[in-house]
Image 1 (tube, rainbow, N blue to C red):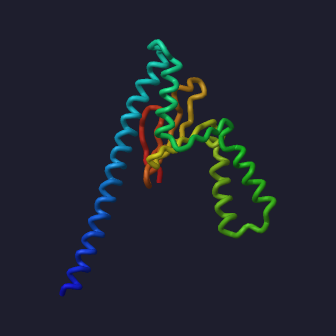
Image 2: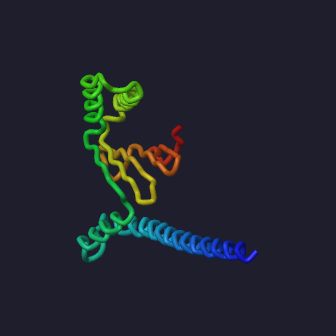
Image 3: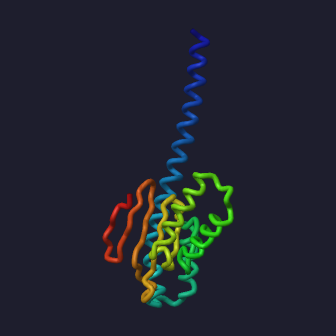
Length: 171
């Protein structure tokens, strides 16, 4: 009975340690999420000030914006020529590499169909955020502060956002 009691005490200690580690991780995650959303609201305000040239030091405001963006953005990819160059590389790969396995070839052919769409030739940029979400933005060529369309990915959900703000789930 004493041996079993000692084993239970050891297991309780181990589980208590794991619980404390999980609580610390949760607290850190919550603080990171709060900082992300605080940064997002503050970032919008700072951008408005720079646009309106409010305040004495626009350079300082730009540096703050840059710092905030670095704290929430994991990566940024700009496709000034759209996906057309990618489609050309896929076509070249398919024509030059006859040793592709069937599933690899099928994936490349499916990607090629996507890259052949007229929308894929539009300039755009893709942002991946530290929280795991991502956004693809197709700016309006006549006004870079507006967009034609956006695609937002979060978890397993993919949404299209039109220029009037309408949202549609993408299957």
